[in-house]
Image 1 (tube, rainbow, N blue to C red):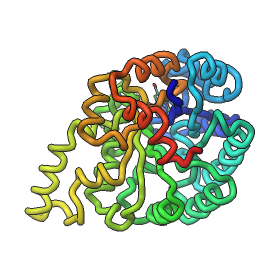
Image 2: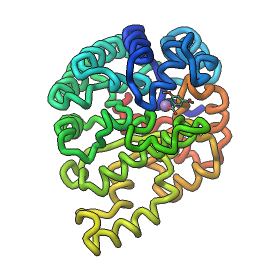
Image 3: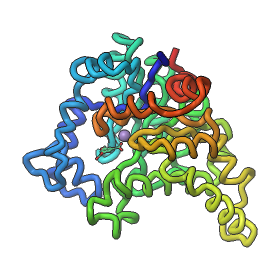
Image 4: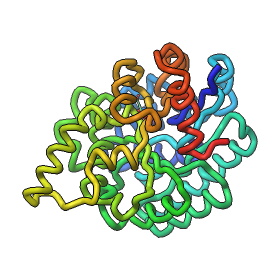
Amino acid sequence: KCRLIACEEAWTIPEVAEELRQVARGPSQSADKLLVGGIYDADHDASGYGKMNFLEGLKDVEGQRLSQMDEFGVDMHLLTLTAPGVQMFDADTATELAALSNDRLAEICRKRPDRFAGLASFAPHSPKRAAKEIDRVMTDLKLNGLIVNGHTNGDYFDDPKFWPIFEAAEAHDATIYIHPRGPSDTLKGPLMDYAMDSAMWAYGVEVGTNMLRMMAGGVFDHFPKLRICVGHMGEMVPFFIWRINFMNSRAQKVGRAPKTQRSMEEYFRDNFVFTTSGVEDPLALRYAIDRMGIDNVIWAIDYPYQPMKPAVDFIENFECTDAERHALCHGNAERVFHIA
Ligand SMILES: COc1cc(C(=O)O)cc(C(=O)O)c1
Ligand SMILES: [Mn+2]
């Protein structure tokens, strides 16, 4: 029986849920308002998320979550404050609530270190205080890395204002998990119809855009040891990497894209890992492993948004060598997220 560590497992605390309920009732025009209204303000649900009843599963750790982990043989959940995290709040509230949820998370991990590990949140829109919180969570709270959700007020991580965050993350060897959220105001245009704003499409576009801006913007030339994790089988990038590489190197040759020390494919292979969260497709997984290397692929459920049992069945039935299985199910997670 292979140790199973699930690495994109969503969780929240009442204080963040309450603050998001206020956002749902406020003037925000963010694409996330649909989801936030549905989950945290269900009586004003315009998205259908209220009917999916995610909130219980998000708040729960040692109840349903743990009993399902026992029932289906999941050894650990790597817990992350669910999207959009603290990023819809003003910078001060975001900074405070990130620290509060990090403290709560550290308590859970201290109480059940054999079952739970955790990624710490921070407020990207207060980069200097975020860097300080990264020092605190990695040194004092001994958490396992960092979580952030896509853009912050429409800004992406190629923007040097965020780079104190990367400096702190790199210094602590803390992997930053870039999780999706709804598309930014400049991206959302035609994506708001047919539920495309959700995990079905815009989530991948939102994270993929952030990833490409970081790689093409030379972030990894400044931070060569920075490691980013993304979910959802690499947010479409593994499938498209040949074309991304070809077109970026052509653009560099004609001066349309800045020169970078390494190629897009090298940055993706060297500075990224990705999880299988919410993509339970054996063909996609086999391609991703063969194309990007087994050391870059990590199993995840995306609980409670994805049910636990199908995700376990998916990985247990996946045809692979023993070495691949160990890497996928726990080895890579232990290395990337410092899990004993
Ligand atoms: C933050 O809310 C989420 C909702 C869903 C969904 O299935 O609607 C998926 C994810 C996700 O893919 O992580 C996140
Ligand atoms: Mn998720």
